[in-house]
Length: 167
Image (cartoon, rainbow, N blue to C red):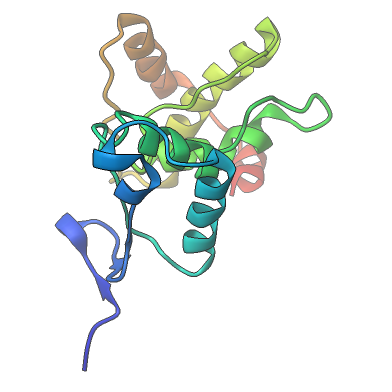
């Protein structure tokens, strides 16, 4: 019997049949290949069919394949003022916390929206600390300001109602 999944590097299991992005770039893995919309459609279809391992590298293009993956799978270009920021960024923040994406980029946001997005990290860390006394989150950063924000999360106290709302 052939296993359909594999625990790659001790991480959550991935489907053994993945998708390689090299062919989304031009000849010799250089430059674009055709219409970017076609590449985005291919990537979205692969994920729609259950692919959980997408193999890419920054030298494909260079950087073109990774940009296409980002556009296809993490498409939050603008915040919708009618939807809470936490709702819009929540799933992306979870993926970032799991190490599946490294950064979340925002475009065309107000100062208030940016502040709320930054506070999400504090709330996420506080939530983890409240979930279990044996969880030890270890968020990494190269920024002093971000380090301060992360460590300040230890002082955030969430009520039972807030914990229920957050899940």
